[in-house]
Image (cartoon, rainbow, N blue to C red; front, side):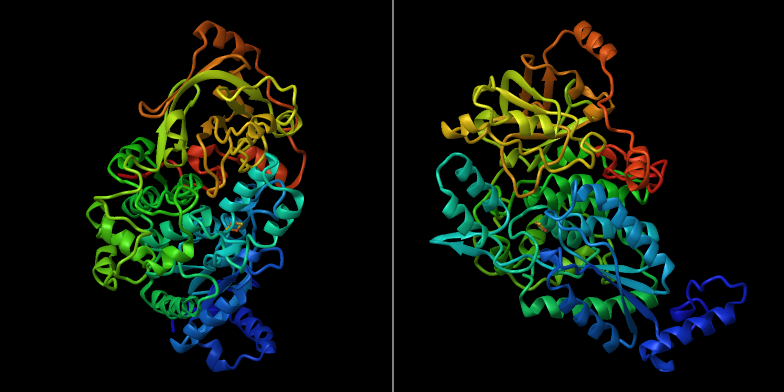
Length: 572
Ligand code: FES
């Protein structure tokens, strides 16, 4: 073993390296390790178990399996904790803390002696944070996810978080179900530990990670409770050992072409809009820019193949039974960059060729008979989109894809909460709802508030969808005609800051346009009169760091001091 591997890596600085090693070994021997164990390559395992995080409820079992794989391959597994984030247990929003988790993970990967690292994530922000960390630390790393939950039942209906959470809540708000039933539903929506059982952000990121080559084949869709989840983890541990020997690094795997593969899969699975922000953040760590116009063109030739909620009918356990990523990658093969290297050391093309034979199923459609032909996510330009906004067109109501109407503006999340259900709110079904000051700085943390609720009085009349526009994000489990990520955000003077209730707004998705139909002179007058919203200058702590360094959606909402700039490459 060379001097800088295993326990000799990253020695604490006392001015005497042999003393540092001696002291390190003295302490670690208190954990019962032998000299033989301490002479092995060290594989770090980032354990994100937390009693606040049901999506990672099986992390201890995965850690155990990864350790088994590492030891079978002759290495020493060393588990370490990092921040764990769950969507419903993070104030003000998990996105606010994603970069903190990425920093924690990166510094632990670099500060602890490990020759490779197995990253165990799952819930929406955890996999992006770990991939961002891996890209920056650039030591051999492999991603394992906790896996999706199983679907459950409420009466005769199948249910699973969290598309059904929203559907039932909409029914409750509209008076279609009562308090007794909503309480029953609450106990049924999440029947097992694991990530949301639909094509939300967690499932989207898992599929994109596998397509990008940072996960062993087949790992994205195995449900949390299946024995295969443990076997996959064991294999990842063993493979991490080989990667440590080979020196295969994230920067060998995460390239413009492999990111394009991940984006292609995002479109084909009808994935979460959050996938765009997170992959931009991962790419940005390696100086790679996402070409959003190329992404939009990619959408035109990449139909939605996967029939999963929130846009389709099935759940993640159905996708796994249908073959998981295998049928998706097989169908997409002519459109993918097959020469990209993966964590296996083989190319994506070689892995696709080695996939098990498919079987009859109805969850993943062939390219010739897609669910939606026009691409899942469209990139909008225009004077109200600024540097760009996105819309998940596969989740839209077809009749609203082209819509011109009056704007009804909410100035903040607080304003929205205060007025949206006011019976006297001046709003009709045809109006366009706008929420501003809810972006990276405005909220702060760019929360998933873009799924603006239908005003109660309209919901009671049976209105299910309206055009909604914001500078924040939307949960991947949500659906509707919803424009997101308008940037720069309103809190820094972006275009949404200039809209007034009563203005005419034009959404034209087929022509990729989002326009505010107000004369240029009037817009100039409003721009000159604009002042930043109060409360965006915290005095201390992480809030101060966040506000001073957070970037906009197009740059992945990363911190300016963590990205690699200038960009040195662009996605094809
Ligand atoms: Fe964790 Fe949905 S809340 S994946």
